[in-house]
Length: 210
Image (cartoon, rainbow, N blue to C red):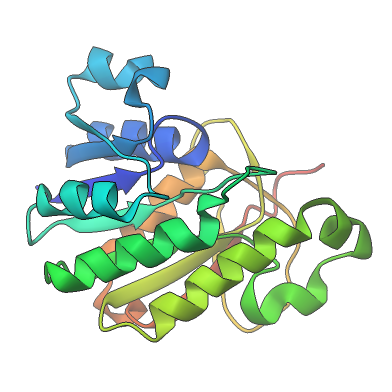
């Protein structure tokens, strides 16, 4: 059993990861600004840490409470927030993980980040390009860190069960959708694969349609 710490666990992809990891028998710790927003945490008996990741001191305190051998994954993101968490929150988190020598970290961003910006449509760039650019900054900060990192860029996220049809790829243009639970499955697969350290992957489920 591994200890997996999920940042952004109150909703969306983070909440789906908490559920999936728990049901795979992993020891899960949930971190969120407001963990009570996810009633499943209490229902499943999952310990939680309240942390505003845009506050460096709160991030430092939260990371200090994490086991040194934990696997850490972050799905944190914000849309049109006054202080977006996408970059600064991850910068604080990465710095704190380095300080406490917690090495294994998986950062979930999105298609369009980094070198895949060129494949994002003009409409997408106009609609949520600012958030993608923030996430790209987080990727760059992570890539220059000392952590054993993996970056995962999923396509459009939907609710739904694991399909076992999600595909990981690298260095190619992809577009599409994927269930949040399927991203969780692929994330756990990447955690267990040491060859994924230092790599960037994208993932979609080609069986899903818009």
